[in-house]
Every structure is written in C-alpha cells, then in structure tokens.
Length: 274
Length: 117
Image 1 (cartoon, rainbow over the protein chains, first blue to last red):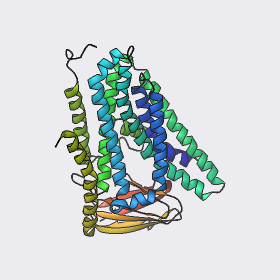
Image 2: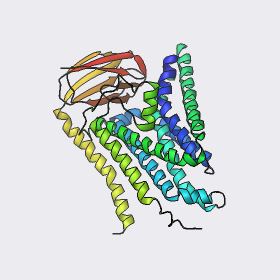
Image 3: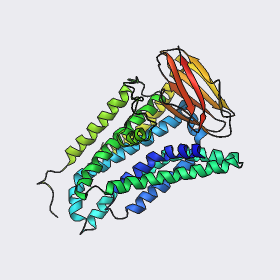
Image 4: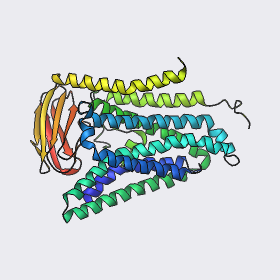
C-alpha cells in the first residue's frame, strides 16, 4: 500500500503544486472556481483518454509519440503562463483599480483566466495519465492484496490535494501588495522549468539532441527524488543533472518572459484613466 | 497576405514540421546501437544490458505483463510509460563508460543496470 501511495503521490505532487499556485494567482478573479475546476476536470478526462490510448500514442511518430505529446503539452503550458504574465503586466494595474467597480475588468480578466485553466488542465493531464495507467493496472489484475494497493493510490491522490491546499494557503499568507510580484516571478520560473523539462522529452524523441551532455551532477547534494528536490523541480525547474540544452532553454525562457513583460508593461503615465 | 492569414499559415505548418522530424528520426535510427529488454512477471529480462560507449543507444522495451510499466532512470534522464503488452523505444546517449541504473517506476522493486563500456 505504501509503495502505491508513494508512486501516486509523486505523480500528483507537481499537478497539486501548480493548481495551488494558480488558485492563489487568481484569488480575486470572479468565477475562477468554475474555470479551475473545469481545467482539472478536463485534465482528468484527457488523462483517461491518453491512458486508454497509451499503446497507440507510444507507437506514433516512429515510437516518439509519447515524448512529443509530453513536450507539446509542456510547451503549451509555457506559452499560456507567458501569456498570463504578459497580460497581467499590461493590465494588472488597471484591473486592480477597476476590479471593485466594473464588469469590464471581469470580462477582460477572463482571457487570462482561460490561459491558466489550460495550464491546470495540461498539468493534470500529463501527471494524471500515469496515475490512471498505474491504478487501472492494479484494478485489472484483481485480487485481495490489490485492494490495499488501490487504497494506497487513493491516499496518494488525497496527499496531492493536500499539497495543493498547502501551496494555496501558504501563498495567501503573503500580503496582498506583494502577492502579485511574487506570483509573477513564480510563474516565470515555473514556465522556465517546464520548458527545460520539454527539452528532455525532445531529446528522447531525437529532435533536440544538441548540447545533450550533463553539465553538473548535484544528486549527492540534493536529489531530484527527495521531497525538497521535487518541490524545487516543480517550482524553479531544479534538476540534479541538467543538460547544457536544458540550461540554455531555461535561461532563454526567463529572458523572453521578463523581456515581454517589460515591453508590454504600460508607462505609468500612459495608463488610460477610465 | 494579411497578418491573420500569415498566422494561420504558420500554425498549419507546425504539425507538418513535427511530422518531418518524426520521419527524420526514423531514418536516423539505422546508425544506432539497438538493444532489447523484456519485462515479464514484473522483472527486467535481462537485468543487465551491455552497450558501447559514445554511441546513441535505442533500447526497445517490450512489456509482456498485463499492467503498464514506466521505464525510468535518473542517470540516463529518461522516463517512458509502456502500455500493457506494448512496446516502447527509449533513446539515450552518447554515454560515458560506467554503470547506469534503471527501474520500473510503477513497480520500484524491479531494477536493472545498463553497463556502458
């Protein structure tokens, strides 16, 4: 049971953290519950579909279907997170001013909310499909000992939800005026980490094999497998054995993200007074 | 051509590029060292694989069990889910000589070693 708990927990950990962060980011946006729940539900549904067609997916694209799928899903999340941050850099100030009064801000706030719902969806989808495969395998093989394994899996899912709650309430403790800049930075690092992870999948798919040598090995200091390593892996993209290409893409993503945020940020005077 | 049309054109191009990459990798495979590993009764057979150093390695993972498995290795930096009674390709390397551990992430007691020499 414990083994199953650990396996499932490790898969849902990342999705849990991401959902928690995004709930905190959208804390004051109306109807966010609907969007985020929709994202999770869509992700779970997608995970079941992906799991059902795991064999087909795996054999697509000369045996690289799974890798291409993972890379695509990660890159979609990177684009959506970038879109959100740029959008907030552009409209965040007006939004804060208008939020109390107008319905207009609510309408425009939705375009960014949709992007975040997609991020939640793809995070759930990616991690979820492995959980579905794992749990389905146990159920399909039947037997009495399997019941306890399945219980372990369910407990693993619940611990993932706990991680989500911890991330959410932890972030809410940050005073409101700092929360925006903190979450913007978190989203930037989240996106950079995802982009670096996508690099690995593209390398496995034989698409991006350049600069594939490992730059350093800090697994003796902080392993990817430890709880702290895993947390940092999700939050800032920590890897105990990153390749050169991963580092390049990681830094490039951060540069593009902060660059775009700066370019699109309105001059203080240029903010139209509605 | 207006901007919208250009955007649509670019979007349509993306799957085509992915497809080309797929064919490219299929062609490139002939230059690779291919090895095969079977998962049967929740065990890797063989549990030790020997491959040459400094070459791109393609490991064909054949899962003969009725449950899914995930071929994973920290030192090789791979994770690959293989469907029940399915097959999966794991591409690694070029590698330096040494021992690289791998395991089934869905069944942690199932472990094996890739020996590069």
